[in-house]
Amino acid sequence: MKNEIIEMGKISSRGQIAIPSEIRNKLDLQEGSKVLFVVEDNTLLMKKVSSETFANLTKPLRHAKKKIKETEVSSVVHKLRAK
Image (tube, rainbow, N blue to C red; front, side, top):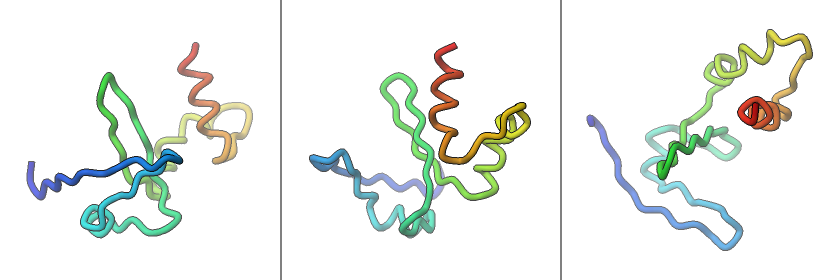
């Protein structure tokens, strides 16, 4: 993998993870940046979410009959996965 960065993180007692500075700089993650977490088996993937990628991720939800707000996306996804 080109430009691979491997860093170790630590989870705080409150469940917070500090993203190593080299990774924050590489991805231009600033305070308030949004990230998407995906868990598959024993693997956790974290992806930076820009306004463009968020628009692509939520496109099917926006075309639904009921308008869905950004704050509701997580609960809607969980409900759909349960079906």
